[in-house]
Image (cartoon, rainbow, N blue to C red):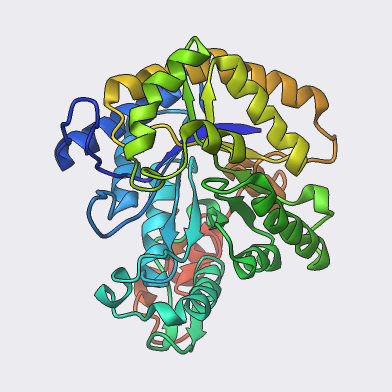
Length: 396
């Protein structure tokens, strides 16, 4: 079971101080938050992708590569990578590069995005969002698994004899999650390919997301990837923690009341009772998070949103201390004690390399120097150093 935090990269006015951080301040703070997440023993840090104010994370791979250089154990991910407005060729190249730079400590979550004005900025139509998402992922899936592809679809120019570079690390593609708030088609897409499904688990009762998770598990088994228990599920969530329950409510209330996503709406107490939002003491957050397992069954990744709605860096770092020192260790122990032996671990790069190659050395693609333009057809990559030496006189 992995535990981590995810950021939507919002830049929001602090309703207590009335100050709004600059983009520069928020970007630097996010790097500090990621480093702190590793320091307190969390497993994963993820950041979203947005191309409109008030968000800053338009290039998550750049940010995550910088964080990778300053961490050693933290797995880096996204929440979300837009499979619709991005060219899948660019996604293939950028995330394969991140995979190399992070030594495999990464995966990514794909999503459609629901901000209508963004689509035309990239020459897309939101009315085609679903077929666009399905087609683009089909291409991305192939780009990471085939050295050379011919491809033709409805939403971009055809590809002939195309090779995406760099090839994935150890010739094993990054693990992919498909994230959704309400779309069963995305759950079906995840199940069809045997990928992970991440239920946003924000803003609505758990029962809403349970329908999606159940559907994904059923379809995962239907498509022959394993039993329903072996499907790979992640859950989101939001938490605000203080030593005392009353302090947590008092401190978080002004941020909740002014938050762009749910401010000026229901009372904090009602929202906490009706949705996965956890506000309280460490034990209260533990108890509520443990209830997720009672609802969804065993799952592989739990992510918390803790840095949005204008919360200042100082408070976010304090939240991380409480999360890492008092909440997550108990969750690890309690969830491990009741975990079904059939439940798989979250896929890691190392495990996926072993699954593909066993004890053999993984393939390390090496371009054929005199066939880089691939004008003669076939793969522009050597199968092995020995074969390349025999065929082209190239050393290792």
